[in-house]
Length: 411
Image (cartoon, rainbow, N blue to C red; front, side):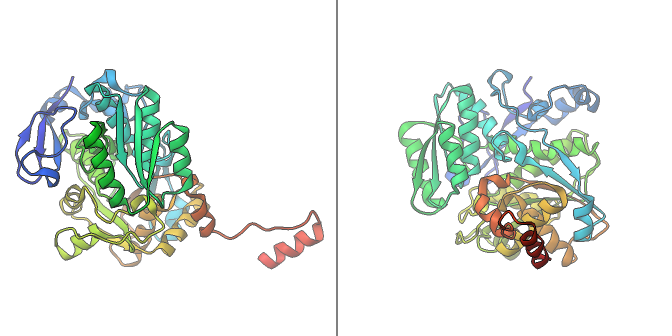
C-alpha cells in the first residue's frame, strides 16, 4: 500500500501527482526541487515498531511504508542494513563519551549512493524505461551502474575526468557506457542533462529527481532502529550536492511524525575547505554561489550543488550547523578511523569524522553529547589517497637482522 499523497515544490509550494517520471516543478523550472509528501496519520495507523521488529527483510526496503515504491519494481541487490558500531576507542581519542559509526561502505557497490540508485532503478522500471543515466563524481555512478545491471537496464554515466580509477573500473565491469568529461563536475552534469533530454533516458540525477532523497533517507531510519530508537544528540554527514544530508534529515522527520522517535537530533554537515558552497551559504545566510572543486575528497567535490535547499533545511530545522575541514584533516581521519575501528572509508566517507574532531575541539559538540556519523563510501574506491594517509610499508630483504634494524628505525 502506498502512503504517498503528492509532490510539493520547495520554492512555490505547488503540488503535483507523484508520477514516477516527475522531476522538478513545472512552474519554477530547475530551481523548483520537489519533495515527496506522505500521509503520516495513515502510516502511524498501519505500521508499528512491533511490526517492523518482526519484519525479516533486513534491507532498506523494510521501510517501504515511507517510500514511493511499487514492491514489484524493487531490484534484487541487497541494499541497506549496514552495521553500526559503538566506537569506544575512537570516541576516547576524540574526547567523546559516545560515538557511533555506521559503515555504509558495505553496500553492494560500496557506498551510501546504492540507496538512491536502487530507488532510481525501481522508478525507471515503473515507467517502462530501458535506459537510465546520471552525472556523478563516482559513487552515484557506480551505484547506478550496478543496480541497473541487476535488472537489465542500460546505463549511461557521465563523470568528470578526475574520477578515481577504482570507481571507473566498477562502472566498466557493470557494463555501463562511461563518458569521461574532461572538465568539472558541473560540465559533466550539463552534458548529461543535454544527453538525457535528447535521448529520453530516465534521469537519476539527485538534484533533479525528487525520489533519490527517498532512498537516502533510509540510512538515518536504519540508524535509529539499530540504536533501539534512542536518537543520538548529533548526526554527522559529509556534504556534496546536499542530497544525502537532506535525505537523512527527511528520514528522521518521517520517523518523528509517525511516532517512532520522540525527538530530533541536531545535524552537522561537513564540507571540504576547497569546495564548500553550502557551508558558505549557511554561514553568510546568502544564496548558493559556485565554488572551486579543489579537494581530494572527490565524492563531495561539487562546486555547483543541485540540492542545497534540502541540505540547508536540514541544518536549520535541526538547529545544527555546517563546518569545513582541510584535506590534511580528511586524510588524518582516514587513518584514525581505520586504526581505531577497522573501518576503511574513502576521503569523502570520513569527512564527517574530521568534522566531528574539529567540532569537539571548538566546543560546538559537547563531550557528553552522543554522536553518530555515517561512513558514506569504502576506502577501496580511492586507494591512492589511502596510501597518502599512512606511511609506506617497511621494505626489507629476507634477513632477520635487517628486519630488527628496520623495526628499530621505525620506532
